Length: 190
Image 1 (cartoon, rainbow, N blue to C red):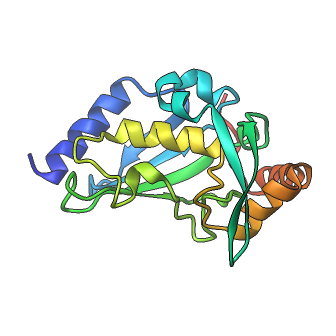
Image 2 (cartoon, one colour):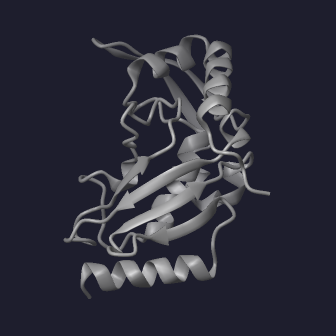
């Protein structure tokens, strides 16, 4: 099956049974290898994806600086706002070699998150070259992304300053993230 055929089939399957954390899932008219979606972070991310979250029910928090990584504490992952206050536009690009190579996921809407670069690129282990498996489906990638949004992975941040702030002063991080989310996030559909 070619990349276009598999991606078209996955898109069709997802559109038939759209997860509650997604809206407006579509592909470019001229290119089925480029998808667009609106992500609606959920308050209860772990309840929505129990299989995905079981091994990560306890997150280890790291103090990360440019020179070292140290374990600071172990805590249960937080599922409180700010991300569930708004929605975020995404773009998913599939390479011609899909499923042998992973898709890339980009936030089009700005987001204040340790695992999302300023350019919108996402650090998501399931789509890293070393972890990618050709049998992985796009819905699994999107589920993992939905969980990551509410539960940042401080072990693999793209924005070290945000990971540091979340680790050292989580109240300040959540205040700043909420302000940023309210300013730049998309209104949530009803």
